[in-house]
Amino acid sequence: MEAYNEKAIQIMNEVNKVVIGKRTIIGKVLTAILAKGHILLEDNPGVGKTTLALAFSKAMALKHNRLQFTPDVLPTDVVGFHLLTKGGESYQYKQGAVMCNLFLADEINRTSSKTQSALLEVMEEGKVTVDSVTRDVPKPFVVMATQNPIGSIGTQNLPESQLDRFMVRLSMGYPDIKSEIGILKERQKSNPLDNVVQVVERDEIINMQYIVEDIFIHDSIYEYITLLVQQTRENPLIDLGVSPRGSIAIMNMVRATAFLSGRDYVIPTDVQYVFKDVVAHRIILKAKARVNNITVDNLLDDILRMVRPPRIVVKGTDVEYGFRY
Image (cartoon, rainbow, N blue to C red; front, side, top):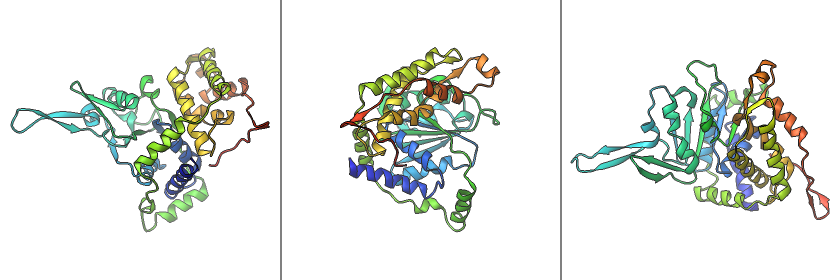
């Protein structure tokens, strides 16, 4: 486990060469990948969302495809289609953009709902079905989608069913002054992506995902996750709470968080660290909350304060809390 953990740290170091000053976001993206999840990056244009995805694909030797989601993109562009051969005797499958390891769906909220829905099966099951024929996508498989804030020209809300399939929603934000100066210097003569080197093979990523699945979770942690999720369903200001799929996403994320922290067991701080990233995009507020300027972020902070975390003890002493990134 320790050797793979060091590999994971090296991946983050490589990506950090390109995406300067966003170490926490880099760590959470890697956490989601190791948890076999998909990532939704919501932010203003030009803050480095696409660069982040390309840096990960290069450091992890992942075959990547990028599709710009404009209004004229069709579902067949995503999943592929069957083309009649020259002799007219059979059909040949032409791969869609998702047949890769890392699929970058750029500005996913600018395309039609029909095209967006083409991603539902592949994000949930890792398969695509075209003309009743089902095919597996390569492993590992990750969808990293970017979307501009709602209200930007040409955007529309993603349906709840698709939002629920993203393990986390993250926002990079603008860089601070020091980081932006570093970005300007790096871009003077070359593209920083050229400096990113491959750290792992694809098989090693799969092995890391298997290790993450074996991370130990105590029953009290399962109960803690369930109590937090239950609060989102019972809160009078929340119209739609977190589904069981969301609970599973929290469980998988906390395992990956523990792995990246160098532990083979989960602690309550792991849950608190990822809770809002996993949950916020799955919640719909009631009109009463919106009228009173109550945000999802406010409510989730209240829930974290309300539900008391368990006290985990290892060999007679409290577990030391903390993260390596």
